[in-house]
Length: 291
Image (cartoon, one colour):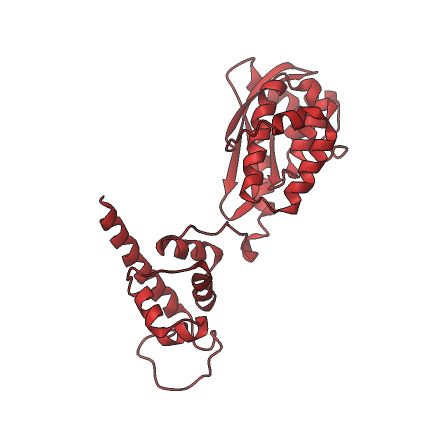
């Protein structure tokens, strides 16, 4: 589709979106006095949105009409506040207005998703799965992650720090050297998205204090998006395991990453993982299963 046609369609959607959101907000919800002239349509009037947002009436009318005008993030945020847009709707408004959307945020009503995410990784059994926050801190893990990857309370509970410092994991990770470069490049990509975030700086300082291996890879300045990593593990009970870890995001919880490990068609990995999760396998595990 030609660029002009795409722009026209985007501005048309902007007009329809703003009109639909304006119709949802009652004067009382916007803090306006009740009464006054009877309204022909539900919701706020255009001039009311303009006054409440601190913008010119004509400018807001042009915006809602889908005219090709200049907009700023500050003004769009004011309009989003008046129209009581959700985080997802606010990002959508930015896109329709032709601006880069702000970073995703966790909506207050989505903060209680952890029970559902716990069910997700427990259902992934007998395969390892864990969830980490944006700083790579482990939020939760399933039994298989404890048995296979050695995740346990005695570690730092930061997936990247433990990758470099946990002797149990390093003793099992046959692919450690190959994967180290990838995980550091992925961490640098995450850091670059939030250069002033003190949480990332704290993890970075801990990693740099942990030894020269991380520092040497960090100085190479490689950048890589999170995706899939092949892992080869030498488990003391079953020997070689070949799995593929996949990092996935849930849009409603952009602060979390779900990491699922899938057995590859090598070394009879699937059957070995099933045995390790069985009562017999659990009895032979080196560490107790995480609760």
